[in-house]
Amino acid sequence: MFTGIVETTGRVAQRARRGPGARLTIAGARGLSRLALGESIAVNGACLTVSARRGRLFAVDVSPETLRRTTLGRLVPRARVNLERALRVGDRLGGHVVLGHVDGVGTLDAIRPDADWTEYRFSAPASLARYLVEKGSIAVDGVSLTVFACRGRRFTVALIPHTLARTTLGERRPGDPVNLEADVLMKHVEAMIRAHRARR
Image (tube, rainbow, N blue to C red):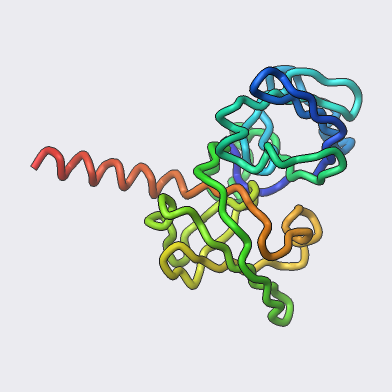
């Protein structure tokens, strides 16, 4: 479980094929030097497992399913990625509940500066549209954000300078693909309503 509060960023040092999957070697920040083998880490919002570690370098294996459903298959050496270690019991939940299970890939449609804020407008896959709720939460490349101006598959978020500087979102440009994870609480509510209706 994660919060969507990106801890730091890293850069892809190497990408190697592993059959139909891939292994990414990532150079992390000094604060990640204590990563343990088998530990979960979110890379651009996708929950992966640390399979090797040496100094500031760590490796994660990416399954074919994850490559298909996320933007990780597009990563190349030197690409910057958002990193967040799994939530520990007792940690502050500063963002929202994020599982690291990417629901789909969306697209950044437009960027509009607005005083101290910058508005980003995204398009989500049709399957995620029903989870877009005004003032609800969504994770974009692993970053916990608040949704506003929902219209069908499109939604807007407002980013502060700190988020733009400390995550990869400041590097995104219109047309770029992004990983999206809808609020898990919304998905559970939907499942409960669906089950209730089925019993009627």
